[in-house]
Image 1: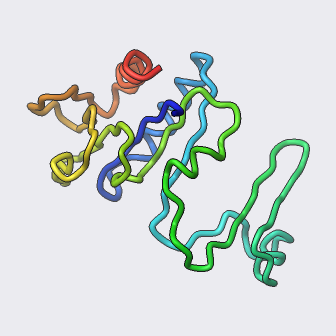
Image 2: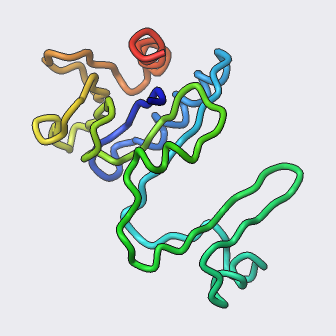
Amino acid sequence: MRKVIGIVGWKDVGKTFVVTEIIKLLVQKGYKVGSIKHAHHNFDIDQPGTDSFKHRKSGSSEVIISSSKRWAKIMENNNKKEKKLNELLKEFNDIDVAVVEGFKKENHPKIEIISQNSKLQNNEINNVVAIVADNIIDSNIPVFKKNDINRLTQFIIDKFL
């Protein structure tokens, strides 16, 4: 099983900020990081007017875009069942850790982010191992402030890597 750490929380609590800062620090420390972002809606990674967009819109169910710098594969699900996290993790080839934003119903270890205006969800989410909050709160699991990404990242390294 790959090493996986998830970041979960209500909309607009700063999940993407925390994820990107964790990724930057892990990479600086020499780890190869993969990331997965869960989307609850229709999304495009190619933009209208691009050739890949035209390929997909014309009916191609799989589109690969490739250059010397990167490649991407776009698969049309056509309203089939969404892939589970463990299926998506198998798509990674050469990483030390996967940082996952969302997928709160899956069973991987998660760090929950809360803001002053959001309620704690960890009674509803399994496998929450830490909390990131605007203010330190009482908890049976470690709590980190949003601006203390260094300590949070070290916690991830110590506990999971």
